[in-house]
Length: 179
Ligand SMILES: [Zn+2]
Ligand SMILES: [Zn+2]
Ligand SMILES: [Zn+2]
Image 1: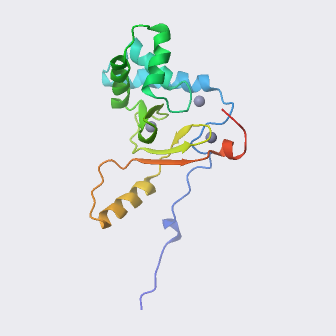
Image 2: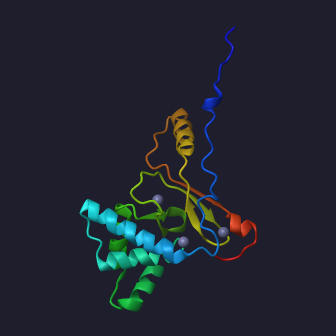
């Protein structure tokens, strides 16, 4: 009779004890925006892509907060500086930003959110707070693994393993109001 030998090391090590992917309430959001714009500059420069003033402005508007924004909200904000902006202006800029991994589209909200780790490979797992509207990315390979296995046993081939989960962020659960 074979006894099972499961080494303890197989237990997956818990991810670093950070407070999770959601930004802390009252954090210095200007720094999030600055670093997102810097990273975008570097990333585009390294790929030879042109981050035009318009694209950069749209990226900045998407980064206005950690809440996903709709294209028409972006357009309305853009019109303050560029009264002639039209929906295609925004959609083309958003497409560029999506193509270069600088923002993500949250399908269920039909809205866009800035990517906090552009340039890194990721698969699109989002936690969406229904109370404050913030969205955060989750990078957990075990989710994709479980999805892949589940799909496989159903004879299903994953093409876009997008995961969008609604719930309440820790700040909202603690009743700390709007960010
Ligand atoms: Zn922030
Ligand atoms: Zn991302
Ligand atoms: Zn929340």
